[in-house]
Image (cartoon, rainbow, N blue to C red):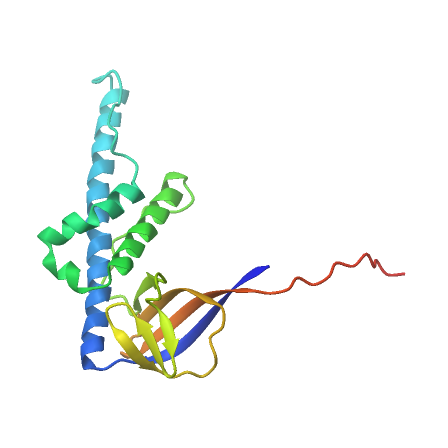
Length: 199
């Protein structure tokens, strides 16, 4: 049976790593807000056309831009970097993850499970980004954690990390301290089932 675990540690990035973490947080927020703005424009057009249909001004609403397409949006990220070169400096997986988060939020919104996604503010006291494990880009090496683009970052290793690493989330709290949360997956033996019902 596979079980997911989470391990949280204090990070001690050097000056260059700190600048890159802050830049990655900012670029992830920029990408999220950019695509959210584009989607809001599409939704506004759909509602305008739908209102015209209901008023009898149009026979049908053929506007096709009302759903957020996660895969097409992720595929457009490399093209986006041509217009915004600063996006090349940060972890591309973190940018993809923010697009996926936006897509998930829109998925719930279209199913009427939550409100429409809102723009992310840099004034939010907690800022973070998440990157996924692929080809050994995240690893624990003694008292350092290897992270994409950042290299080896010193951290307070208070306990051993076990299991297959899935992702890492880097957070900056209001006081300016940095933390990393590592998500892992590990195999555990299932407890034997018993047919004992008591007397």
